[in-house]
Length: 304
Image (cartoon, rainbow, N blue to C red; front, side):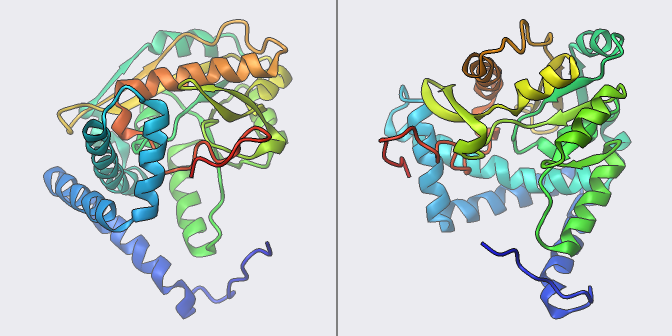
């Protein structure tokens, strides 16, 4: 599919929607905390009611990953997922548009000794982040304790891409295009920590099939490849909004052991096991709206 062409003039009407969205995010970032939560919940509920296709995807994912839930329990978790992701939009706005220092009192960071020990080796580190609704705010909070670069997917709209990239560069040391493997390896080899999220379906060409919640899932091989190319420790990072909806917990676990092993399936399964562990702590905060099981092994029909 050909890439969309955008006008060079950033004042062109085609960009007005992006400018409006940026203005709303900047405004939302400055709101009192209770109002942010209320607006986020309202946005999540509205999306839950209107986005039938995304609701179906979310329900399908949850039925595959949590077969022990009955229909009513799963429906409630679907609703909570939309609410959490609605709040996540306001959290993203806060992470991008506010100095994270004003949230320091809301953060508990556990396991910092694991990251300190890893960075003391002088090999850099590859941080495994996860697509929770708190992803971008989690990055901002992480920057209060440890510097890191980030791997990201560029936005097609150049106005929003400029805004998003500037925001992330205020949080992270560098924002690296996900296709720039050399850039990732270069930064790690120079002693930097790089935040990277390997938990989505990127297609058959770059993946192996490994279990995720007991379901065969296309799992990217790049995590093991980067670790092999750099010799850097791979650091599992958890980050959640706590049940009080006012505070956050970040936690580093010890680096993955015997990783990479040379077996792509085993390595992907080890990464998936950590991601599953993190999701089970607060499952409603994960991005279940994504078609995680889109790519199927040969001969299997689509779940969606």
